[in-house]
Length: 370
Image (tube, rainbow, N blue to C red; front, side):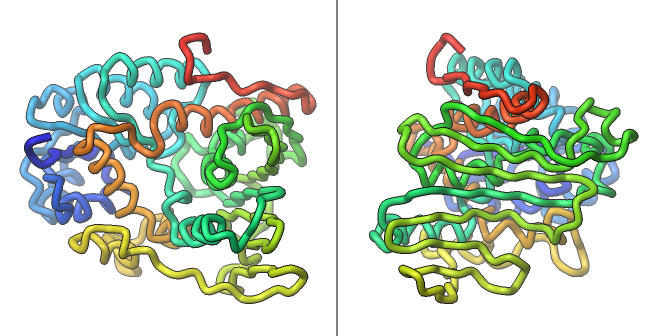
């Protein structure tokens, strides 16, 4: 591109965190914001001096000056809004998950392919300092040959917006799925999932999903390394955790069991504390500061930060990858086909759980025959 990427953000709860990052990024211009509530829109836009403001996403998408949109809206809106933006000729970044059904996934992949624009699912875990550190241990040979991977995401969603109530645990599984598949260096091939426990009838009535916990075994296309993914959303007592564990030939990384207890690297049979470092040096100097602080803090809290600890410093890495993929005219690191596979693992896992643990094959979204 010959000019800075002009960005519009849709959804300003969690989405507000990205405003100062795009404003500071040397290749981006923070041009427009969209939120349905006019008063909240004005408050945020005034705070950050963002010039263009929309209460209707359709009006934002008709703005010819906007090159890219970053969607941070409720889960049920992700697929339709991504498709609309792609069809309007915009590059799209979308918070997780990509979609809620396999048909929606297929439609987003098709829209991305037809548009010729970039799509990126903004999965935080694979840009967290924990993931980046462990990836470096794999690359430098410390871990050795990976033998098995485990991902988990346990979170109590009581008090979150209504569309979360009774959501099947695996329908929001990318935080646990993405790190294990990324470290395996492979997309998923199939899944077998066990549904366990029961949530209240009131919660279960929303989506017809009865399970408190869903645990899946995932096979990968490269066929050597397998993974386990566990997920819970309601009525399961556990401190919040997004975690992954890597069992290696020479060393095993184990995520801390409770917040602040510390990660562990097992070298041979000897466990050693592992201090995970920051990776701000991978970013332009203008946005490096955002790995350790952002919009939200003690005086201005958002639930994803109260429970999620700022997503491991991932936000500037995500924004940088999205912008640079556009500037360099290449696919994003989490492009439509990758996002489709990571999202489909959860959808197919829940299908397996509802069918008593039958193996379900993950569709191949890299072909036209999905």
